[in-house]
Length: 125
Image (cartoon, rainbow, N blue to C red):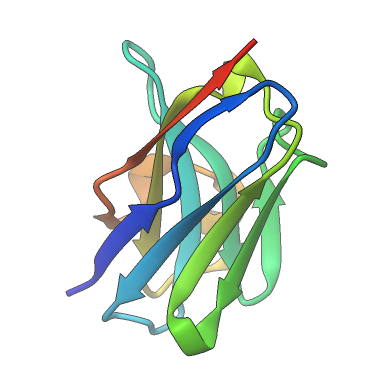
């Protein structure tokens, strides 16, 4: 069983930065780690994924967001810079055990098995 707890969301003005954290417990074998986001009425979209050091980003966040891990702390981060109002969403971290690079590259929420409760990010113009 894998449990994930996100933190670090909040409200920021456009151009600002936030760092989201996701504490992960359990099920660490060959994981894909991912960050996703969702706004009301829309499907959950992939933001960034990582698998054995290979990292993939949605085009909308490339050059602005960075996914990273601290294995000693079992924590995954999403550093978000140059935030835009369109980045406003509920952000979720997720894990896919026994993953592979094909899954990671797809950035599809349906591929991931375990989810945190989400943390809200609001960017004002």
